[in-house]
View 1 (cartoon, rainbow, N blue to C red):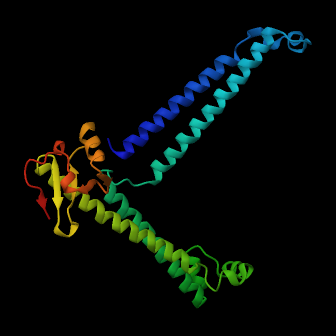
View 2 (cartoon, helix red, strand yellow; view 1 turned 180 degrees about the vertical axis):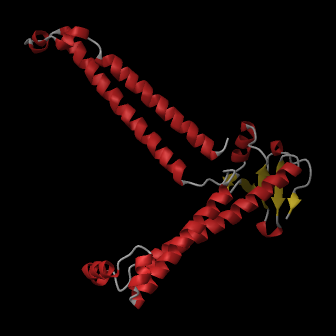
View 3 (cartoon, rainbow, N blue to C red; view 1 turned 90 degrees about the vertical axis):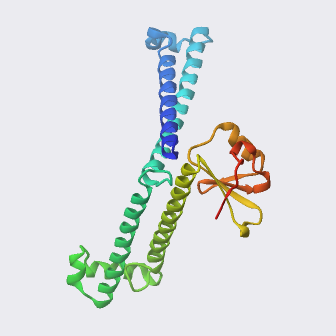
Length: 250
C-alpha cells in the first residue's frame, strides 16, 4: 500500500467515524419524542427524572456532534495534504515534480520580468502582463522603505529557487530509489548493499513490503527506515532478511 493509499484509507475512516457520531447525536436528540414540544413539561419547576434524562441525552448528543466536527476537520486536513503533496511512491511522482518545477520556474521568470519592466518604466510591457505601472508605483510608495524599489522582493525569488532545487533533488532521490527497487526485484526480492566507506554499515532494499516479522527483526537489530531502504550495521543483519548469499557491493 502506497502512502497516498494509506492517507485515503485514513480519510475514509475519519469520514465514517464522523458519520457514526452524527448518527448517534441525531438519535439522542430524538429522545423524548413529543415531550420536547410540551411547554408545560419543559417549564415545570422542580426536578423531573424524565426531563433530566432528556437533558443528559442532549449533552451526550452535543459531545457526539463535537467529535463529528473533529473528525471532519481531520479528514479535511488529510484531504488538503493529499491534494497538495507529491509522495515518493506515487506512480507519477517524477511527472508531478517536473510539472511543479516548470510552474515555479515560470512564476520566477515572470517576477524577474516584472521587476525589469518596472525598473525600465515600461508601462506597455507591464500592461501586457495585466499590471498597471501607476498602481504598482503607488503601492510601493505606500509600503515605504520596507518594500524597496521593485514589485517583487529578492526573498520571493530565493524561495522559489529553493523549492525548485528541492524538487530536483527529490527527482534524483526517487530515480535512485526506483533503480534500487528494480535491482531488488532482479535479486529475488531483496537487495543488500555495502560499501567500504560505509565502515561496516549496509543498506537493505525490498522490492515489496516485507512481512511483519522481517520488519520487527530489522528494528530489533537497530536498522532504521529512510529514503526507501533500511540501513544499519551489516554484522547485525537478521537472517530472516535473506542473507544466505554475499551482499551486493556498490
